[in-house]
Image (tube, rainbow, N blue to C red; front, side, top):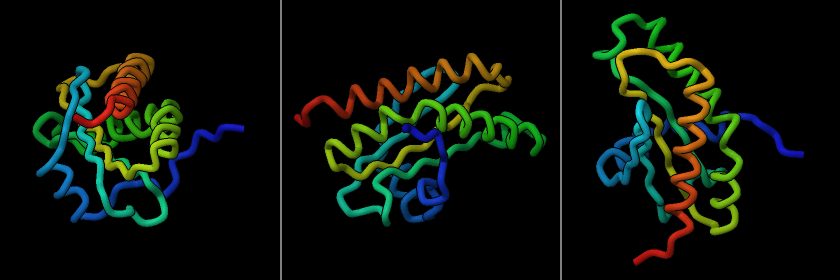
Length: 132
């Protein structure tokens, strides 16, 4: 049975890893989400996939709005993460992913779910490609 969870061990919290991600990142953009990801050589603790979400204070002045956007991002990731987990386990790679919401208005939950599914499928397709 597949479980749709977002465990604590899966959350990206390490300042070092976040800085490394934003220095050496590869990113794709599916409006209104920019997905930054980085394949790391060293093992990332027990879990081989770390995920973070965020939005800017410039776009959402009120904390309640920023928190809502982050909650929606986490929820949509939780529902559509299985293909990403499968490829990480199959290829035995370590991956850091960050979902950044960059629009000034909040999409509905169903629209955001569609965008997240597209983004995750795009990352999976990129990871399937052989390295040049």
